[in-house]
Length: 203
Image 1 (cartoon, rainbow, N blue to C red):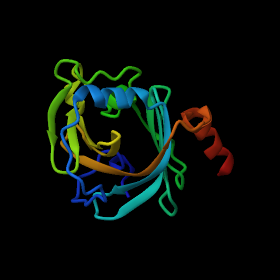
Image 2: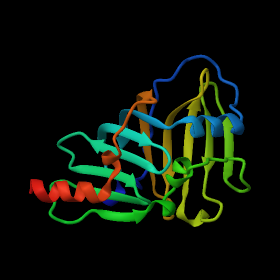
Image 3: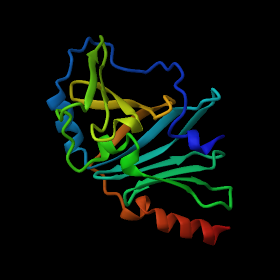
């Protein structure tokens, strides 16, 4: 698997197991409130890869600025956002992780300290169907880095999946399982330098 594509891979069709009740469009202000109140969360995720395979793993979020994708074996990938950096590890390789500034990825939109989706030019699309509300957001100061499409259900507002589109128009989908919110998460989960040292010791 091309690790560079773990966050920026082409989108394949996906069917979500969502509530069957009809849904009204969720206002932008309520979505901003949900994201700002989301301090910590953990749960399972499913990712559709560009070659048609499916990856699964555990996701940890600690806002602001921190996220961890721990992929199930035999997938060697580990992705950490922390300290202003996104690092993509190959746990079977002797190579150092690929690293990118978090602010240069669309994940920065939802990991910002204060999420204000009403900022001018941040929302490029806001729509609803019978099940979900979807918004497409971008960093208005860096629109060239791509966008993130967030899919929510209501009653209460909950994030179900996101789609990242990078600067080359490549896409990846992350589908969230049941999430636990407000859970204690150690800062070490999101430390890129610590993970580099752990990998050195285990090799």
